[in-house]
Length: 269
Ligand SMILES: C[S@@+](CC[C@H](N)C(=O)[O-])C[C@H]1O[C@@H](n2cnc3c(N)ncnc32)[C@H](O)[C@@H]1O
Image 1 (cartoon, rainbow, N blue to C red):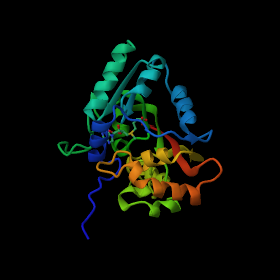
Image 2: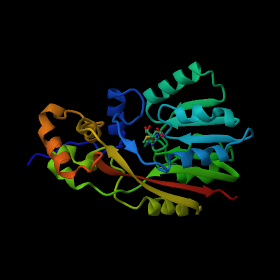
Image 3: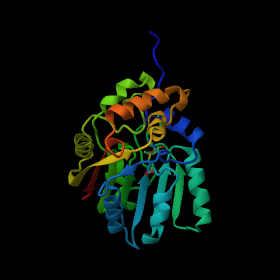
């Protein structure tokens, strides 16, 4: 049987393709996510850590809204992402919003051109590193760039169950191939391992697992096809989505798990 060529969701080639089909990083489907899902708790912690004297680094900033929204709470933010078009959008927004203390950089700390993973900062130059739903590679170099007492803070996608209905769809559209799927390995373990390898320990971690309800089959189609190329149309697959809703939907629609791990560590030198 011919191999299916499906770029791994959230791989570099997946992001490059996504950036060519939608402007900026966002979920294109409509759904309703339960309260206390981790997003607000992350923002509250971020606000707590920022102060008028603090300098911060944001990793995997996408099109920059988080850094721009929090610029007035700190002295400076350097925010980087490896996708040039996201950085271009971030800079356009920065100009529109007349923000002067945020710098956006197109940078890939994992670039094979670097001998070692290296954050784009001098030693002892920031008080906070934050990352929302981004990669974890940067932990390795966090101690070098952080000042004594700094925090590193992240909201990481957490492992979740794969829904039973996924096998009703063509293989390419299986839930585990979609960008919505956050993985099956333990994120807690993965964060702890990386922290230990960098000489750090977890300060605090909180798990969030709430329902996400998709009430319309078209929105579920948007979700499982997100970031993919050459997919069948919704009309082609409508009968499959209708039968998934007939068999698996609860009163308000298909219920997925929205899972996040919010964590922070402190750098002591
Ligand atoms: C899931 S998106 C989150 C974007 C943004 N933080 C947000 O909350 O909307 C992850 C981002 O990390 C970026 N990214 C992934 N690996 C990276 C790397 N090695 N260096 C820089 N950015 C990276 C991607 O390009 C993408 O914009």
